[in-house]
Length: 246
Image (cartoon, rainbow, N blue to C red):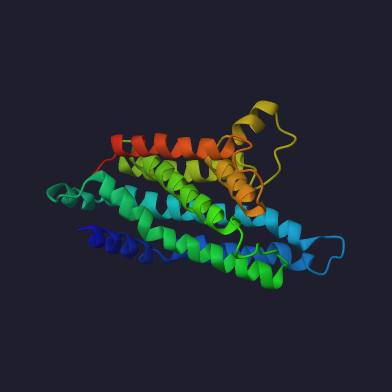
């Protein structure tokens, strides 16, 4: 049953090649479009630029997998009554959510590895030494970040009774989080309360936690990592409570 659910989630992912492209291929294409012209600029320290950009690109890729892929696919299968069949099986919501995470975490890890390799070979991204504690900490934070984003997506996919409305709301949540997180434009000119909210939303928690882990700074110095852990608990419980088969 467990491996069958993982196979099901992978089939859902592969049936939507656009999600794979936008979650994997498009961020890499965007990398060359944004930073390719900067490589010949002597006034730009590419290593520092890439160190700051890498967590943002990984966060966007994770959000695509968690929102426009898994969460929207769940809302769609609710809409067409496909998930109703699972009610006749021993499958519990915790099994469905856990296997969904396991089936997609490998895609994100592959993207992160590809991005780091390209960043190191073509954009002067400095790679930490293998024998440092940075790698296991960064990997752990990356996995925890993906789990948190996945649970946020699943919560919103099940929040509304009407599956079609839930599917549409995910677009609003996805682009709203990117907008409020300052992924499209800097928030420095906006009111202070907007900047405070931005610092506590899931994408900001992920970006700041990944940056601290990658740069080897104190992961527990600010609120971001603690808020990330708390969000896993909160949205995990909410995802189970509001889980809907149809």
